[in-house]
Length: 145
Image (cartoon, rainbow, N blue to C red):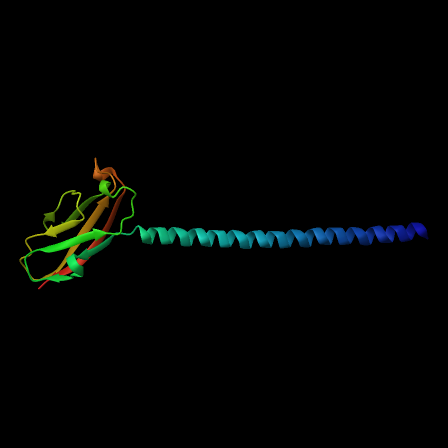
């Protein structure tokens, strides 16, 4: 009878150990999966915040969105690069091309016809060869009255 009782207790103990291990593995796996998801979400949110922080901001001088004169002044800002002196700016608007310049304030001339105008602004972090640098681009619409 003792032999049967011992086998009985060994079988129960084996089931408890296997069940505990399986349950523990499932819980640990679920916790790891949840942690990975949280970490990935935090990384994505941080990347999105950095991209927004580094986004080009384009405005008319003094916040203007229209002009009655034959020119419009664009002010480019918001690009967060360590050495701001290294930035180069270029604006295209119709036939106008400012070429690469070191000043983020650019005047678009020869606006003779009233209506909407769209300026394409490019910013590069390579002063020696702006076309081969890290170039960001954004458009801005303004109006000639």
